[in-house]
Image (cartoon, rainbow, N blue to C red; front, side, top):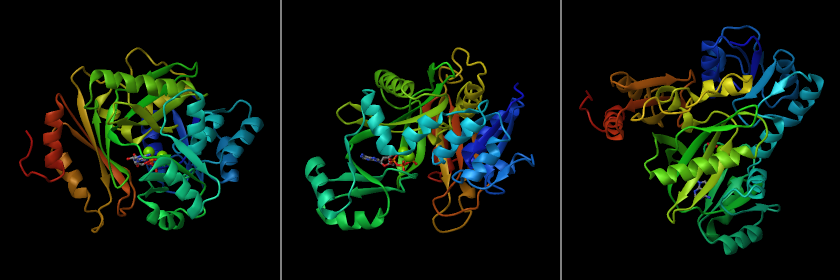
Length: 388
Ligand code: ATP
Ligand code: MG
Ligand code: MG
């Protein structure tokens, strides 16, 4: 479909699924990450770069080999991206380095969203972390509040719930040596997310609003569409679209939101890449989030309704498969049950099993959410009655 080579910074599961989507369109991809990373395992080219997306020399190496450079993770070295952009003026980098820079520091991201009049949870930078400064935050926000690392956060690693003044010393210890900010507690009824595709021309297209359920700060389930009213789904979609209109460059973005008990919607954070809450799109939508990303960064067609659910009564639940907490590979039993389940698809990422590590996901698609839930109960072992 396109004879340009796409370089991907990061070869984890998101990179792997971008490779899959690109391969179906005959688009060549090369990966920068450790040898045998999940994306490299399914792409036999020998031109990959072994190294790290945070190492300038490795980024320079992959930049010299591709026409379009993209990311599967936001924790990349942006100054080097800006440098390679100058060295290779024809190289296209999406999402734009400017956008990655704004998003990878969660506090800068917040400031950017506020400047663009997008609703976010109230927050404050912590320039000098100390018992005194954190107790002042407690007086301002009340307890609990969330202390967060501004950078390198994922799966809640980088977050600490400050429950009371007494937990401040522990918070300082857990997040020591990290740049911090504090966020007011968001008393959410649900967490919602919307995947947005932004085209080279700056048009935005949204996938259906979904509901994510987290366990231990890690996404556990994703319901598509979200179990909220049509008007809330629409409000979430508009909020996400407006937020992504404010970031230059193109590609896919994941927008995480809090739906508060008082009906308000606030953005939690944005990911400038494919996102866990968009995995359902592989089986439930006309075009997957991964293919949408490839199309967007290559300027390929994004026709009407390409982000829609496959049919008007398509419902889906995505279950993350995490490494079992005590027995290595035990999570594969869940996958075996999913293989016995009509309408369920298993995706494994080729990673070594470790407790709580994202090892894969399962998509369950059906014409009703109740049917999806019945199938889910069998897959998780809650019931032994096989779904028909
Ligand atoms: P991700 O893997 O999504 O990148 P992360 O490490 O960047 O995660 P956040 O998204 O900031 O972390 O937070 C993880 C989860 O913690 C949220 O999905 C939500 O459940 C909870 N959380 C975060 N901030 C708040 C808040 N201000 N109030 C209440 N709960 C919160
Ligand atoms: Mg995050
Ligand atoms: Mg998050």
